[in-house]
Image (tube, rainbow, N blue to C red; front, side, top):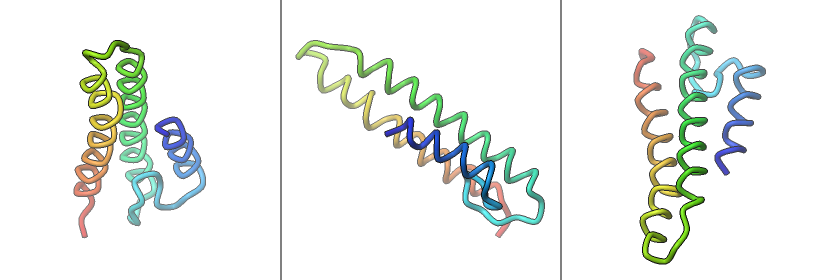
Amino acid sequence: MLAWIILVGVVTILFSDKGFIDVEYRTRKKVVIISLSLLLGAVMAFLMSFTFSSVSGSAVSAASWFLAELVPFVFLFSLQGFLKSKFPS
């Protein structure tokens, strides 16, 4: 799932005026820079998910699910909200 988010991020940075961050702003340069920051966060979330999804064993299954599935998405959506707040309304 996170790989698809990364792919969508690349496409929207290249072809959308709002970028990956989905914000209209007067200068495209700032939208691209903030969108690239969000894309970097998506890559970091993907790497975290990939790392913790390879952990096996029943004793760590709940913890690995939490770290592999939940935490990367919460991180990514929190980062998006934080980065969107950097744009004036």
